[in-house]
Image 1 (cartoon, rainbow, N blue to C red):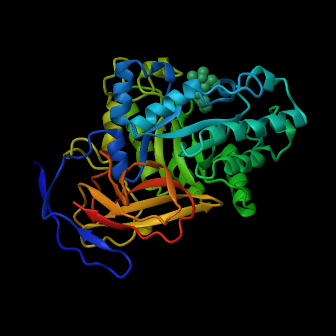
Image 2 (image 1 turned 90 degrees about the vertical axis):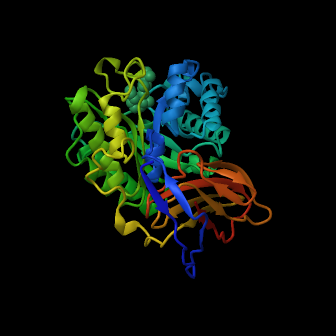
Image 3 (image 1 turned 60 degrees about the vertical axis):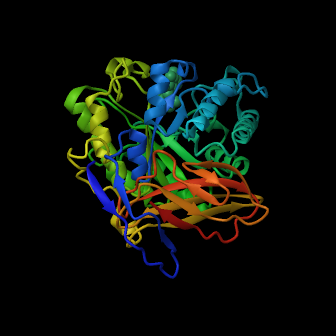
Length: 448
Ligand code: 9MR
């Protein structure tokens, strides 16, 4: 055993109720998987998933061991979900969602409105007919998955490459410049519990394209258009390397009041160079408080859309690459004697003071007419936690329809396998969606 932790008696503050359980606990070795290590940093680690590969036991073995967020790689796109106008087909996407729910993984929906991978009938529409079809598509798909999606890529890749700093020409763009905000408002109405993201590539550093996206997000925030997050695809290779201002770019978007996520990470290369690049990207996310997670675009190199560039964390046999170890280490997991991350994991300015022991829980609520999402943050005291349980009664009339990163028994919400261990002063988050009215929720936390 590497070290012993003693849990002291916690003082109960006026606002935060701290309960200490147990006298002594033994800390495990540092988190051994990407998902567990990310969870200890209050983040997720995800991958793109193809439904037809779920029956491959090597593939699903790695998926279920390492990842706690999944993005359907193609199954939720317009051509897959509405191959004939008005006739919806959810089989493969539902398969991924069911698999995720059975394995404590959350789902990033990808993508509601995009110029690419449109079904033929949509490609042939224009004007009002296309606008109406787009709105109906967003409504139907977001409603089908209501309560099951952590975040939707509502609009994907709507800005032009190059120095122009404008919108990409597409049939959707030609329906009017407001098509993006219409898509976001439509998605919010259909699934008020999902975070709504704009997602793009070549926006990973500061450039004309990312400046244009930045201006759009700023405009949306100022006018109350519902946007919660921006996804940075982060497809890198020697022609398009990790930008030197990657972290600064994530931070400037976060400063607009949105979460940021790395959504499709892959980095062509091999060996130490590739490993260092993955570590750089991982540390950049950890250094930005509102960077809530990282998703790689596939599991094994052979699963990649550009397999010849070997851009992922596992080789074709499913063995861990140097890039895997570097990523895990950057997340603070893996061998505890290995080099710690050079960037502080979480910005201290945004953290509450470290309580003396036990844990504290705070809750933020997103309430809408008839339902709410509650996000509960569990912060470890000075001794860290091995396990935690939050007691949080809900008002009568509130019925839980979905929860994530927790197991529930009545009013008690406990850690799952990957997020029980929290380092001193660090936090993890879990969430629930319910019908009814949240009112004032008062969570209390017990640690062991
Ligand atoms: O990885 C996806 C690949 O299987 C598809 O053939 C391709 C079709 O457009 O889309 C790939 O995923 C893309 C994602 O949806 C959006 N960003 C770029 C990704 C890589 O091309």
